[in-house]
Image (cartoon, rainbow, N blue to C red; front, top):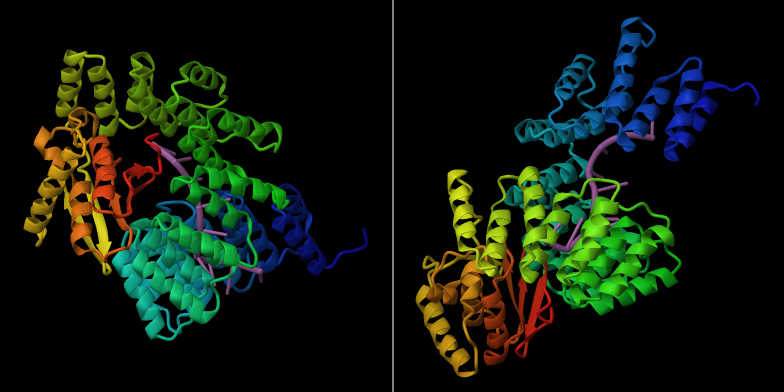
Length: 550
DNA sequence: AACTACACAA
């Protein structure tokens, strides 16, 4: 190679860094005579991007030392923001505060990018107050300053403040980018605020940025999570460029919304388009097989991950395949998979297994799964309740009582079940037996009336679910007033006619409610969608999209 | 050259 000037050294270091080839980038970096700011910041960013923020900070320390030796005469904003980004990747980093102090000393606090990085660092280290101070102190905020702060509010669940800031941003006439919309739409997805999401979609159309694959995927995701799979599909069809994320979003959306065959069809289309699926894609495909009860197809897909696509299994893949097998009662194969795993099963794998054991009353494996779960997350009430259910279904009532006592002693409280429904952009939340809603009288009257009709049509309340559900301690008559039934009844009363009712629940839907809502969908002639903690149920004409396989 | 970054089932 000919004699290289600093510029060509840097070019090659940057090329290696961009290819995430840290080894060669670092080798060149070490060999380079007269490293400048560019070399240092490029190397640091590469470490952060590859998940090695501590290495980035080590380099920053070295550079600081060289500065004190007089090698550098001035500080550099690029290096400073790279250092802040590294701190942001380390939760609770106190190094960030030191770097902040240094930035103030060398007068870099007027650079807008440094300020964004600083805001982000504080927020990601859990210091929302400090982050907001820096944000407020940023004069001439640009779209990145706004988007970053908005996103951080959503990250920590401060939804209202995030939306408020988004509207402030629009008032300040800062034009959002697809980054901004992605953050806002994600917040809509989490809370299933479809009306709001729709309005945001409208804004995007007006600004002409809905069709990029980045923002388009966020839209597909939002509509899927709100149970509007048709709208998700329309957005997907209209996207001029679809990347792997778009496809994966669509596949998972179909899987969750009770269209496993569509999910698998889109997986085939994806393969035919020549794109290569990644580890996330397979989570969606496997969950489609699980929901459809297509066990052998699922196993075929599972094996293809490694054999055909050469992708290493993740803990999530193992959890998916155990879910697939457990729901089908194929415990022999579950045991084989667990013993062949190179890593320790994660909590989701154990929870899936425990869930399957409840269906098939498999006490032996239930005990094993519960034991593992008690170690991983001793505070989780669901483990106790499910294990108690397995004992109950084996008529081992003393064991059930023992678990109850153990929970009491450890003061483990069950997560209260709640359901909610959005009507005219207002969210109405219900707890079991809730009488706090202003229209409680109408709701209870309607439920009583519907209950009588359901009985006439052959509905039998399933008292088993008094025990089986997480909301279990209710007496039989309380089944009628489970939160999901209250929300559905309110939807029938207050929701616009002819529009599907969409109810959301923080826990899994109760089995009796599942049966009852099937009847309700026919009697009230309504499409009722219930999104519970694990999936969607689309009820129509007395049947559910899950075909009772859940 | 730096800051914000869409997909995953329990």
